[in-house]
Image (cartoon, rainbow, N blue to C red; front, top):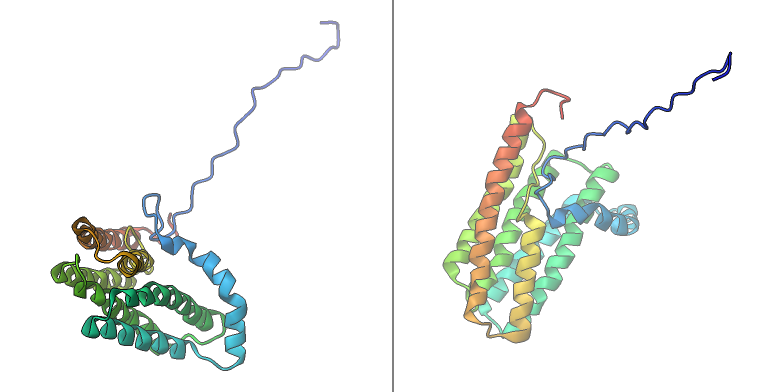
Length: 237
């Protein structure tokens, strides 16, 4: 090097600092659920929700309507036991009910309709509606009434476990693997299969015990997730 020359030392490129993934309650790495699609679903419904709000429709009205139709449809299918083809109504209504559940929440949050009564109605009517809509499976082979009843019980417990997290200072838990939207998808698929291809082979009957087992796991995960979140320092990740 000549006099006055400045040596240039090339430093190895530095990796940018790694960002820690934000943990959202009930949506961990191993908690895949249809519920995670909800934001996109809501975006599609937002123009219709805005119009309903302009017409004076309230969130509580939508909640009660969805529950009333669910109970009426579920009891009719169970008590009357019509031809299996009528079970095609179940997946259609489950899809529409999912939309109505999103609509009532958006009306409440985005149009100033949140209320204590609405919070009670939202949770209670969901449990009642789920029970009524799962019930028809017990009336058709190859599904066993015992397992359908156990699924109804565990579904109610899973929603209770999600809500009880609020009493411990945590957020409402939506952990999977068998949340409300997931159960609706499977029940709708089973009802559609009955409508199109009844009688179903006996092995399909094991779908309901499998759902019950996964719903039981969901209860445990929601309890564990709520306790873990409640035990963290405020503002911690």
